[in-house]
Image 1: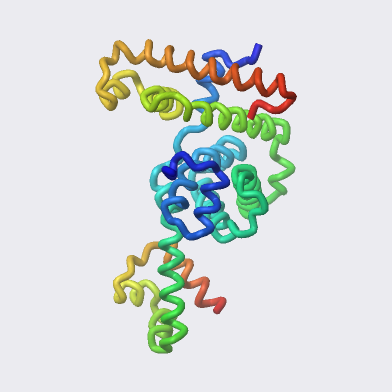
Image 2: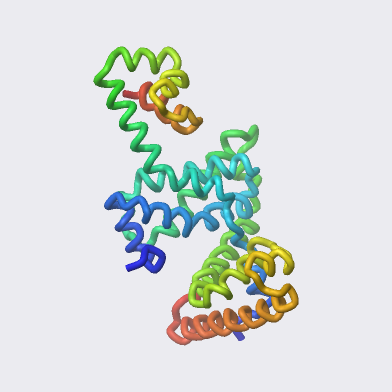
Length: 188
Length: 84
């Protein structure tokens, strides 16, 4: 089985057996998520966010054996990240930074990131071309001209491709969301 | 009504930009770093002269042994030597 198609649980199991390719993939898979929690959720500086990022993955590597449910690696990483962010804020603060965090705003951002993760997982079901074009445009904020140049496409076709790919993504999101609603489950 | 219109999808896609490539690479290299640290510490435990050189000037001793004395390696070895 190709490493990229592994479930989170399978990936964790391979990491625990010392598979370095699996570890590289695990870091790659969750890097955006860990980064976003510290930058958007806790509004850390780039410098502090980088330290937190390395600390989270170092702890994850050391403690992978303590993870009770391999499939729950993402919430576990989220918890490690939240703790590391709070420690970082406390270390440099004169007053209790936790009291200064707007809990409502933080929860809202973390909820948004959950939803964003759900959409990223759906993105994996699109063609590579769609994934690439949507990621470059929205997540990497690249201009039509740059995307066209990088992907060898006429810039004039980028807008219509983005629109088509978004429509496919929307259809997947609505399908999943309705299915989850019908079964009484959650969408993410 | 699911609420996943194109505008919202765009916002959600934008909410997870890539982490800086250098951060990702450093985290991916952790197992390699750990192996290097284990190797250095094991040698320091077995060789008192090598340990003395490490304690006297960690960067120079690592460099002399062919290790790239980058910050994380130096910090990690120093911490292990202090706690061993």
